[in-house]
Length: 109
Image (cartoon, rainbow, N blue to C red; front, top):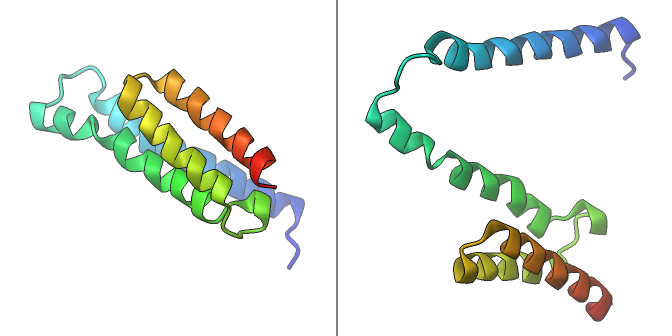
């Protein structure tokens, strides 16, 4: 199925407008007022809830391998968690996981 240029741009513009109003409803309308403590407490957990949902498919079904399981990526994910827990440093966890990924890719192949 082929879409015309006008249809593609219409979808892009509508998604952009929808995204703007979704964010504006939260940031623009109540951005200058203090939020209740219970809302702030739940917002602290948002990155912790979103990141595993973004990373897990890339570890379990990586597109780089055509969707096939890859031991190097699993080891890198586990190493990243380990480095993060051990050092409590995000940058150290990222660099450690990256090093294990590349060692795994070149060592296991």
